View 1 (tube, rainbow, N blue to C red):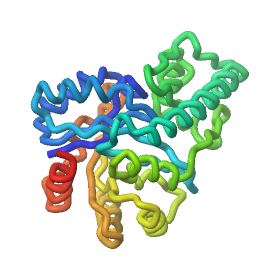
View 2 (view 1 turned 180 degrees about the vertical axis):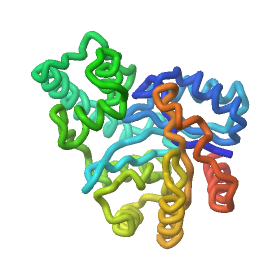
View 3 (view 1 turned 135 degrees about the vertical axis):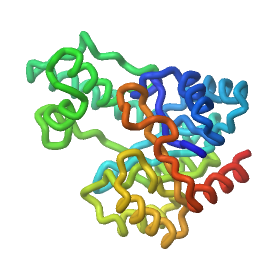
Length: 272
């Protein structure tokens, strides 16, 4: 039973890295990864906690790349000392900080200055941090309302963020000795699924997160089939963020099926 897509307060999650690891162990996972956005800041603490609990732990991160729709790529089993990955992280954080400056200014212009309630993450502050602040100040009913009416694409406070190419992201992950996986492809509604998976396989993506909290049975079947067609492994991830996303508990995307059992065995053999 594994979960290789989770977040701590080093990006837009709510729990400390050590707490996320503790929850993973209590859930009974036999393989786990912390994959904060654009940072490896929480990984050393999580790695230490996992070693103390005897929980096999994959180093990881989640990085956005430029594509027809928002593309998120997980880097699993990466070398924390990789110069290529470190350079990409610096670039990503600079791009994110520039977007955040523009977003703060835009919200202030709209009469929704949320600086007093904004809790910045230790590693990477994301739009989820802004959404939480908007909810706290009463500008939005909940996170869904904040994204759907204020922050999302086409909304008044939407600020496009620049991202590196998929080739650059996958190249840095591979240079760090890691495996690149497409995160939640079913959320990419503006893409043709077959073309997406084919394009990503061509540039070196190795896996597809076909099992995901919130995915429909049809979406899981579709992306599992496309992964097999392109000789990619099939993964599961909860995208855990803590109490902010109660419908995505650690281990919540796991299903006891042959695809995931094979992937777990492969990852354990490859990285441990």
